[in-house]
Length: 100
Image (cartoon, rainbow, N blue to C red; front, side, top):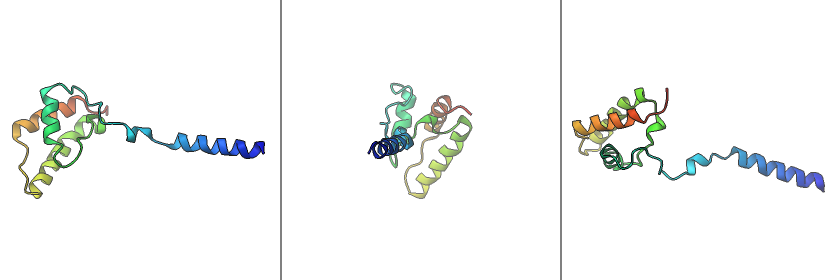
């Protein structure tokens, strides 16, 4: 009986250890949420999906991601991101990007 209880507790512990609770966290840890740059980012990148955290990519990947999203907007016949807003997005994302 003790062996069965031990196995159940052990299996439960392993199951919990395998969970990735980070995917369940609310998207509240965006940096500089009070800044104008964040507002530009949030308003331009939330029409189709939840804006990813800037730390989702290293800085050198963000310009390519922005261009790819621009292409998606054009393919969907949506208004492209204004050039000045793209610069703000790029600077915001690169400043707060993941370490390389």
